[in-house]
Length: 240
Image 1: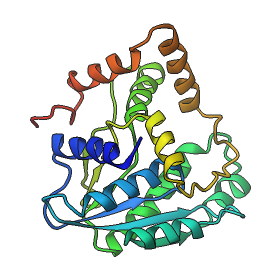
Image 2: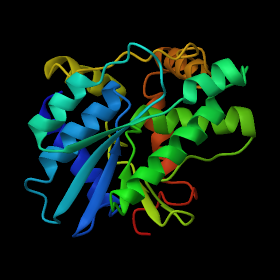
Image 3: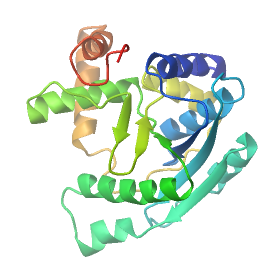
């Protein structure tokens, strides 16, 4: 996928769900993975011509794993003209050494979000952007269905009343396979995730399950995404 195609998908999602307003200051969470770096690329280029003017901040919450080097990400942010902040934490030590969590993902996410939202407010941002893509949407719905017994998914736009921040997800129309292609085409400086449970989660199981069914029944992902858009899940009605 080239930049023009990425910008097309991103702009369509932003327009469909009214994600950006004039004067917004948007914080992007940068994990160092392909998804967040693709989002960084998309929004940094979109702001050059999008009719509603907005500013950006890039933020990485470092969990404290040794040998995770974000210097290449810092160079990319400088190249794109985006201010970049790294927040050093001891989240990994707390979860894996002190608490020895058997199922660490929920606590980890809560701690990272807390540190991220705090910095977002300090930097004066009113919105934050997550890099959830097309496949994440489908996987989240399937996880909710399988593990919670309900038809649900996160919304394209979510107002967080506790922090007075609006969360947007501009990559919801971008497929993961296209993000992989973009990563390769533009040599994105992906930082390897050193979390010991990476790839061994419920989400990974559901991802592989969906891929298996898609192989046997082509078009499954498209139908599932359509079901989400046309259901009564809050936030997915474009006219809201």
